[in-house]
Every structure is written in structure tokens, then in C-alpha cells.
Length: 242
Image (cartoon, rainbow, N blue to C red; front, side, top):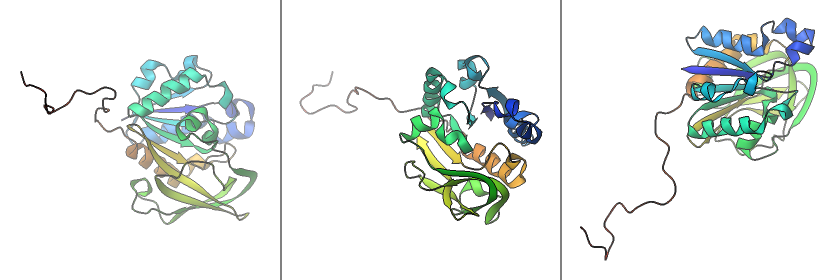
């Protein structure tokens, strides 16, 4: 399976705390543990030509992972439209943490995707609420992170087709932290943890969730339905056969 990990790669350039946590970038850290599972992985970043998401790259991607924060507005609309079309055609999409405000996630959800937030390094406990789902394979009842950014309800998204994780935070808030959707032929998974100043993507259970999610989001090899005018499949009443 071919995976592309997309990241703005801006925090890593500007903040030494982030650079220390992710010396190869958030994208590099995620790519490394996915490669160790046997996936064919490439990375792409905002400042590359076409944000690294050329037609060639997108057409050669089975699952796209997206992390963004500082520069959502800098992502070109025509690139967003290309990514959206690839999802509708069957490419899987995994949106991480502050990617909830990305143009591509909002385009696919059709809502503001807004929420409450607080960044003071409090404990997060991600409870599995759908233990039979393949994304939870190999994970115990919950994942505990000693420091994370808080996201709180209400999360302005469409009702998830499947709710996988619900987070509890030390300050008392809860949040729908693992949500799946289908859009066209493609599968979409939103996964909340991953604030840039904390080593969340080094956590083995978080890595396992993302590995499982890539497998879950693998495209189905069905052709998309044909839309528009359709000739009748049967001979209609009153119509002469030739």
C-alpha cells in the first residue's frame, strides 16, 4: 500500500521545542513507523511545488495522512479540489489533530469543524467506545497521554458514521476524538491527538492506531458508479425490439 504523509512543516522550522520533539519533522516521524510496518511511504510538505501533491503523487497514493495548523489558508484551493476528487474516487484520508481546520477536511465535512481548545499540557485519556472496530486492534481499553492540548465539545462536524474514541481531559472536557466517514468511494478518519510540542507520535499506541487506520482506509478496488443519463436495461413497454 502506498501512503503519503503531508505536513505543513512550519512549526519544525520556527519552534525549537517542536524541532527537538520531531527532528525529522512530524511527517518524518510518522513516515518512519509506517515504513517499519511495510508500507511504501513518501512525504510531502507545504512549501514544495504544488505542496508536494502533484497529479503524479496523488494518483500514486492509496492513503493520504494530513497534518496542518499554522498555514491552512496557504493551501491552494485547486490542490484541495484535487485531493477531494481523489478521496471521492477512493483514496483514503486520515486527518490529524489541528487538521480539523484544514480546507480539505472542512470541504469534505461541509461544516465549520470548530471546537473549544486549551493548551496547558494536561492529561488526556482516549477511551475506546467501539472495541470491535479494526482501528482499535491491539489497543487496550484506553490510551493515556500525560500531556496534550485540550479539544472540547461541541465539535462542529457531521454525525460520525462510526465513533471510535472519546477523549476525557484533566480539566473536565470530553471530545469525539476518533471519527470515520465515507465520502464517495473514499474512507476518512479524523484522529485528534498530536499537538506539535508534545511527543505524541512517538507513543507506540498512537502509532498502532495510525497503522491500523491506514489499513482500514485502503481503497476498495470497485469502480465508481456511472452518473447521468442512463439507457434502460430492459425493453420498455411499447418499445419494439430490433
